[in-house]
Length: 319
Figure 1 (cartoon, rainbow, N blue to C red):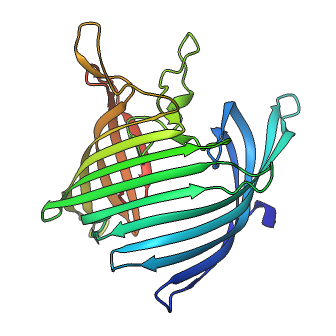
Figure 2: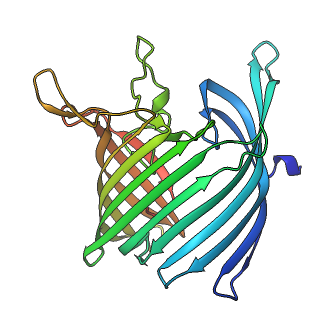
Figure 3: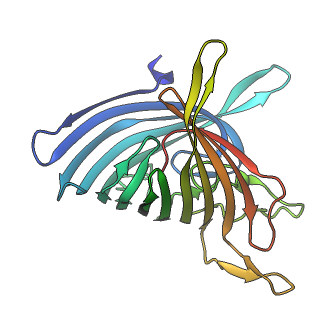
């Protein structure tokens, strides 16, 4: 059925200097989470279906080959249906519904002068600055304004060796502000995606600075060729090539109120206070045209380091 399908259609007109686009979309997900795609947070993990459908329009004006100004408008409905599981019957039953409407224009200034290699950018600069307020046309509409900045710099030190710096900052304000979650293979690789759910014996969060209406993130990464090729002679002659390695350091925080970045231990040693950090290494392998990424990262606050690493498996290009 259409209601249970992911569908999208778009049209881009690129004949003139101002690029124009428009489209429709329909996405449906079945989730067991306390975090929704709109950035809403529930007080406990819930089972629900999320259906987002609507339209979008885009106008993009290039100033130069590398810079442009984008104006985008999204209007869509987000419908959520909540369920509970009955162990005696062995079935889920509906417990409630929630519907929100989002009408959101976005203005973004984008620069991209990067040169791509096999896995992603290897030299150049990318950055984007955007502001996205919602239009509250009724009480059902989401009311928020979100600011976002993403800066990335790639230094090609020598052939096939690249050092990467990325900084991301975001803030959301309003009656229903968006919450940002950090953790996982795309942000803090030493932290799980839902580490913010963990609590101690006293009920207080163990990792309180992984979820909030403000977010700061920095990634430092060194990418290098690990193995050019491994050739096997049986059965037949075949091989695996282009294996890349990465060593990295991540640090970030998500918060609502004021934070203290640095602190000290009872003995006076330096430590990170409200910043979450990790360091580790990764392997990138291509399965045909599909890039596979394996990462091992250790949490650290500079005073202590986790004994066991957090493992992440993901697929996709490098940031």
